[in-house]
Image (cartoon, rainbow, N blue to C red; front, top):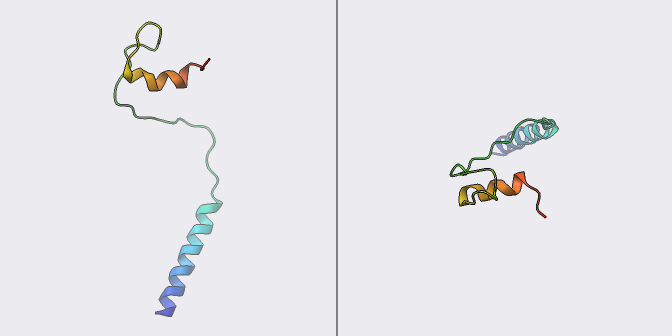
Length: 62
């Protein structure tokens, strides 16, 4: 029992050190799923619920 516990702890600690040392990749594309397509990307022309979450990411808030 004690040997299996020590082996388990050794494996967990080894994997955590290996996974912690990997640096994240810089750049790339972040994909966000959304429930609908906006009617227009111009919030002055058409306002809808599907575009409301996107408008804040595209246009600056004044």
